[in-house]
Image (tube, rainbow, N blue to C red; front, side, top):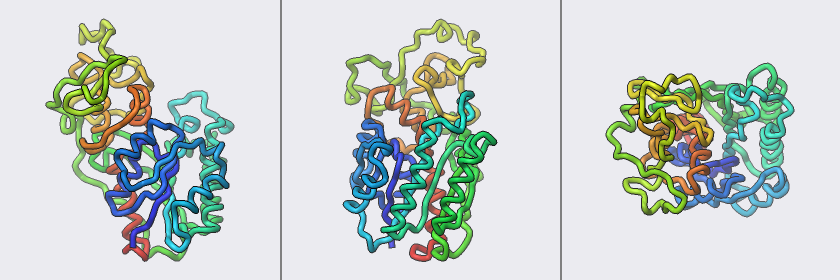
Length: 330
């Protein structure tokens, strides 16, 4: 029997895509970004995707939406990755009282209340490794203990996208919480032995279109997300000027995987040929999205969506590990 999913902080749907590829159904998906929801709607036609600020919606508002979108008698799963900037090691000013960290606690509060009404078989919590750092240790412990107190057995995983056929080094902590007594083994995640490089994924693509304020996605050849900013820095005229000393002009290497894709709007990595930055579509491929996947929104919104996404192949491996051990599915 297929399990229906509630996807919180869904973004573009990287986590959702991996789960649907394993036969799960995303019934309700929520994110604060309307552009991300627009993306979700065109790629997941059977899901009800809605834009809400979850803190403003509150747990009671979320429960109302769940009652509208799920049947009480059917088992469900809950998946999500609360915004991670407050826990990121790249944020040198991060601290345990960062207001963005409230969403991780909201996630636990929401699960607790949903579980009083629905048969929640499992929960997936995805976040950056910094969540386990000393300054965030109390928050991390609170999350783990909350899930255990709700009647879940919690399995902690540290995963790297490169191990799942994704041409990117992207390390994340994954908590898989499975309802005690509803599974028949340890959720083993299968890795791929073959590692991919940037050349394996984006070599030979046609040149992208350069951004202009009046450009329509329908006017972009090859793929509606194959666009990038027009190179303006003098560095693009002389490859010797690229020293890889700053994040803003980091050059990726054909023969290596990409560093973690977590761009600021002026930090999209420089293409290996050093003549321009990577396009959004190239970045999507380096995140493991299929070529037919499409992002909506303006260029800046697409940068945010692809930076925040969970690589779908990694998500699919997580989904597969859960599918194999839950008794109703295996």
